[in-house]
Length: 399
Image (cartoon, rainbow, N blue to C red; front, side, top):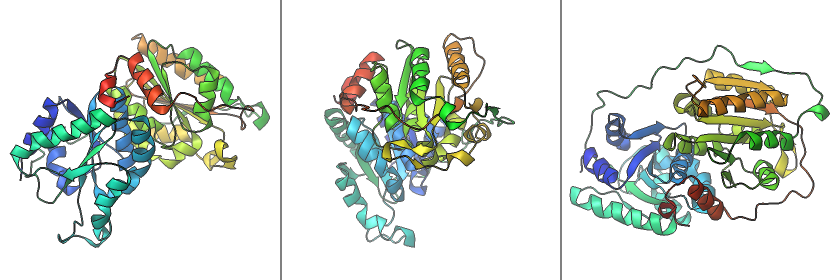
């Protein structure tokens, strides 16, 4: 058995200062220790996949991070582990607890996941070893993880067995700062007919015009959003998500937290937002003022044939307001988008007093231009290009 401080301080000395995850009783000593150290950062995610995406954003910033989860949460993390961290080569250290380990009595819900945990990691091509249980094993385990992460740009896992870490009491620092929800979001509906709504292209043109490359990063959701942004103007400050549906906002949150000097704009879609609505609460609690969440809502899964989503009955802006965003607005006119992007620019100049993330939902027309190309730049290349552009350490994420 080791002390939490022994592992966390060894990890800190190797550059690991960012943590995200979902609690497990095995992880309690780590979480309690990190929460009570102001020089370390812990984000409590709504689910394990969000935590993986957030630490991937930290990696995009050129910094090291650790995602912690119970092994039952591996199911929630499969999508970002297989289509974000693996595809873009964004490394992170995973600490996965081994509930239901063969031969160790546990609750019935762990009876299957326990035995298959190693196979799940191996199937996702994530090398793993058991978590160190003696102080003398910590340095070597971390060094093996870092060697793999630096060589491949992909995650490495430490699987934590019961009783690996001694208890650590949470004395202070466990409560989130109080945030008051907005009384109501702003709505600016003109009552336009569907054929008079703005197009995605028009919205993206406004985003491009309002996001100067030298100070802003734009991260676009998977599907036609990223493809259309690429077709309009393939700039070095842009990244186009592939797969990892719903993960663009926690990914952007990780980057924005790790790089407060940058303005970060996350371009989301209605289908993706509906898939991971829990992240609205995370963004409301942790979202910094240098992050802007833009949701382009056409009421359809456009890239898979136009099947309708249920977004028409959802007030995303009121969800954002209730979750603690600093500002939230929705409407069907491009002026709504313009006003939020302008406010973000003013924040970059130090002229805005808003503390927290802004949200705008713009209802747009269905449909996509004919012959829309796919990006020819590969995911690892677009990641490396962006990291060089923002001055991040590309070597830590294996080109």
